[in-house]
Figure 1 (cartoon, rainbow, N blue to C red):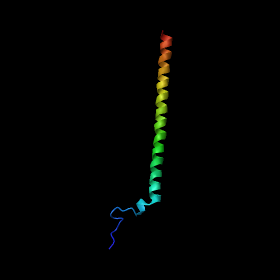
Figure 2 (tube, rainbow, N blue to C red):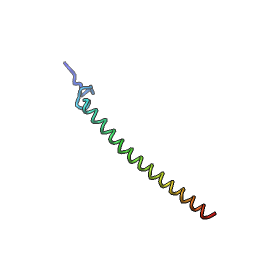
Figure 3 (cartoon, one colour):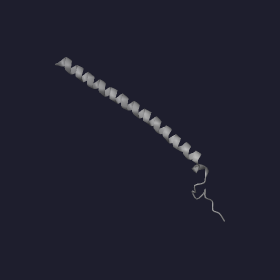
Figure 4 (cartoon, rainbow, N blue to C red):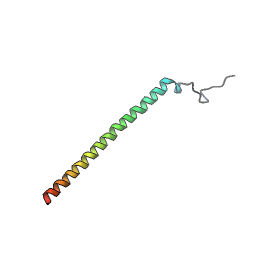
Length: 65
């Protein structure tokens, strides 16, 4: 009598097919790519704010002395 491989977590099941694994990996990559875009946007905005603040301090110092 054969046991049920799907119930025992075997490799043959709809959740473990090549297509399902590939789709799952693509969804993870797309999610990470979206995260990277937001991450880069925040970095760019913070660098711009920091650069602007330093420029304002330098201008203030030049006008003061």
